[in-house]
Image 1 (cartoon, rainbow over the protein chains, first blue to last red):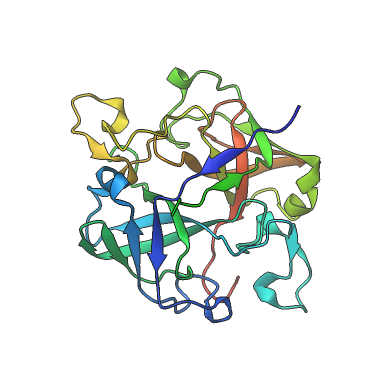
Image 2 (cartoon, each protein chain N blue to C red):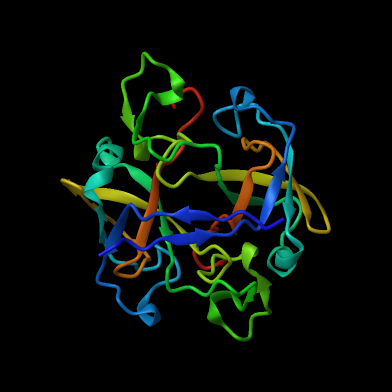
Length: 138
Length: 138
């Protein structure tokens, strides 16, 4: 039986001063710049309750990653022993989905300004989720 | 210009006593059962450094969700006002990717037993990532 496949449809795009992978920090809290999430008009209803000052989880499709890689040298340091990608945050992995926890700084229509996003300019956005608060306040 | 689309390829499957969506808890810490992550043999290298006792983030493709929904009544309570899906953890959303923080209880070859997973039996697994520790220990 062939394995099923599922199609990810971008809901928007990252606008960022980060254009070169060599300049990108490994994680958002390691000096990543502020960036804009530019949502497609068609998903405006989905993002209408986002609010300034809250933290959200942004899921991206890391479209410049390699999908045939199963082990990497952590932090791109060749002296580090190879490590299975599911024990790393490497962008290279079978399904290169990025997880980014960011704070919303401003909202302008379907454009959302966020702090410290380690994603390159043009990276497709595939989802946004709230952080989970304590049970009973969801 | 047509928007690009990306293909998600499952790396494994959830084996769980949860078979009926009506029985599924909303979140993993609300009574979800322990479950097995059954990885495809082909990605064994990717999961070889997972270790018992650690917490990981499992990404699933919620294949029974509706993708044409942009606003929901939170917690399926019709008295709650409609809310944009990107401000909820609803499974129904344009790209139905589930995020589950779980603890690894046991590992048996390419089968990984985890605690408290709110995903139905047969749900495709698309990625596993470590939690991020403090900067400097990555």
